[in-house]
Every structure is written in structure tokens, then in C-alpha cells.
Image 1: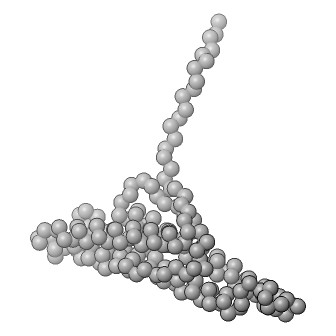
Image 2: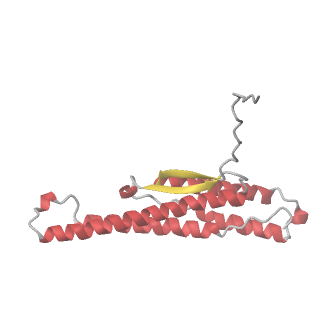
Image 3: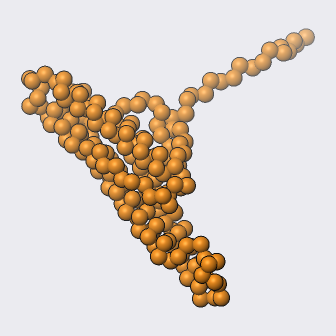
Length: 183
């Protein structure tokens, strides 16, 4: 005779997710990422300031100074154009082992995601502008058109300028190198 147990089968404990999806407005993503990069810069600056004099002529000290110099790019505060207020950026962040390098990567991932979202918006706005040009050729009255071609072009120019600033910051901060404890 076989007796079957009614006890539940224990579930396997799944490992925690290594990457977490994130979503925020472009402005929030950029502002938060820049703050994270400034926090990293301040943290590395504190390491430099607390380093004994005997280590101030080492490669590690020089690498830390270069890192601080690179992360100073995050002090720039580009102003997000109003036209991008509803644009959302999506990216993933590493949530395990939050070393300085991983935190830098998380911040620059948010910046690159913002750049991608802005590029998408620019493509959309440019297509909308072309559609409006076709409507102007038809019998559409000017009051029916929500934005003029010049308004759209001005917004695209503002978004492009903002995108370029954010992209420059992301590319520069991607190069910030955090030396190891002994390197």
C-alpha cells in the first residue's frame, strides 16, 4: 500500500533578478542620473582627500583624480525642453553588487536611454512636420493646424540640443575609471 502525502512541494527559491527595468520621464531620468554621478564624484573625491601622503604619488591616486575630473562633466545641468515633458525613457539597472563602476553604469544607462527616447521623439516630430506640410498643400485652414512648421522645428532644435548635451555627458562619464583597491 502506497500512501501519498498531501504536503505541498516546497518551491525552489529563485535567485534575485540581476537587472531591474526602470522607467521615468526623460527629465527625471537625466536629473537622477546626473545626481548619482555627482554623488560618485564626491565619494571618490573624499577617498582622495583621505589618502595618506605616502600614497599621493601612486598610479591609483592619479587614476582617482582622473575619475573625479571625468565625473565633473555631470556638473552640467542641461535644461530639458518643455516639448519633452511627456517623453519616457526605459532602461535596466544592475541591482547586485553596487560597486562604483556598476553605479556609474546604471547612471549612464539612464542617460543613454534618455538620448534614445529623445531620438524617438525627434523622429516622431519630424514625421509630424512632414505630414503638416502635406496638409498645408491641401485645403486646410491655418487655424486648423495646431503648431506651425516653425514651432515644430524650434522644438526639434531644442530637443536635439538637449539630446546632444546629455549624450556628451553620458559618453564622457562612461569613461570614468574606478581603480581597484590596489591598482
